[in-house]
Length: 178
Image 1 (cartoon, rainbow, N blue to C red):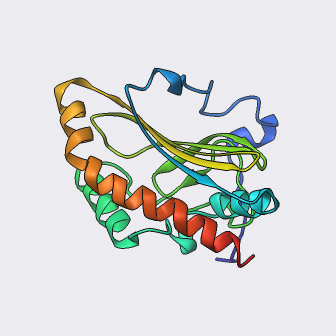
Image 2: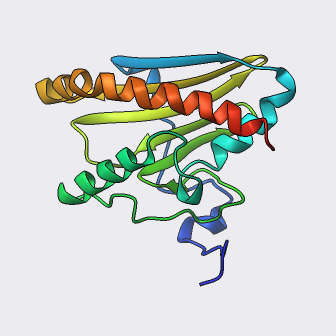
């Protein structure tokens, strides 16, 4: 298979008007948020966004990739897809694309990338990267489903803090070399 080969889907011909993402969920209703903020030089903003768009796949997640692989295995055991679904293209992304076990549900070039978790979870999760002037923010949102969802959040919060703090720092570092 050729690298960066673009395979089309039924919704590709709709100019983005129809796909399997009818609307952007209201992440503001998420009960739990884990926010990481990094002050950046505005001249790096587009480079940082470029790194965010190229996350996953061959590039990995910029933090403890082996843990992402373990999470993928757990997802498969629970009946999910894991990270079997690859990127449509390594050069560009658009709404509806899958990156690992995340789906792109909103993208505003050089401003915002919103991913929705497709993995098996006791709730719904989103990962957002946003850039506003000299502030780069990475936010994890979680809407738990019942007691198991709340237990999941607090049980994995220390690990998530480690991963996501490393991730934001490495994304900024990677952007300096572009």
